[in-house]
Image (cartoon, rainbow, N blue to C red; front, side):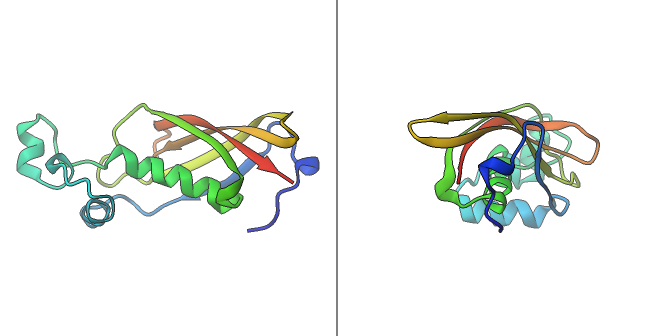
Length: 139
């Protein structure tokens, strides 16, 4: 990770893309163990079908974690001032999560130089699964 300088950032600049491996059953099982979220809709095919879903699907918070990784690949975690998002779609098995961010505002507050980012996690078909924003302090 290189140090991102406030003076070198412009509105419209993009955070380096984060493209992950396709979501599979192992991904979901590992996330269950790591998060403690063992909701059967994410790991039990029979349960998912009873809920009228074609198959199990990814936890929304897994995609949220990917957005966190997008940011911490760009800046140190201690520079993140806020992170908010909303879920807009379901990440199915085989989807390739891709996270991106774009600088939409530069401002100063309480003596800090900050940027506001529009962030998203989508799939290989261009469908948004999460959208949100983050505020990051830069040097």
